[in-house]
Image 1 (cartoon, rainbow, N blue to C red):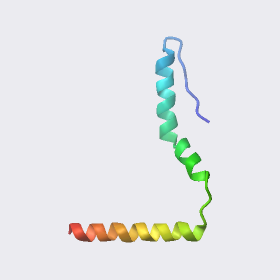
Image 2: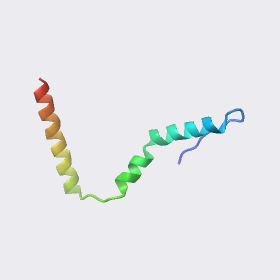
Image 3: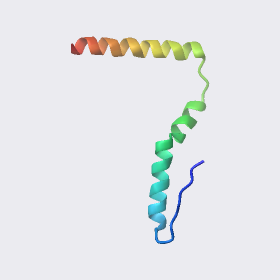
Image 4: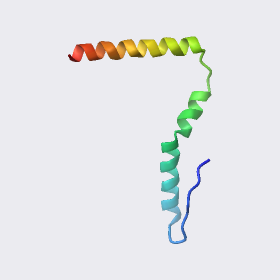
Length: 63
């Protein structure tokens, strides 16, 4: 839950801007999109392994 401290002298635009910053920093939207579809643990492991292999190949090409 995001809590924004809106001060008396602060405009609504500035409070909204602070809210958007906190919202993005908290990663709420990213988490929501991740939870929309279920992926099996075996598939998650496989994709992690493939990503690691790809990173290793890219790093070996740079050296």
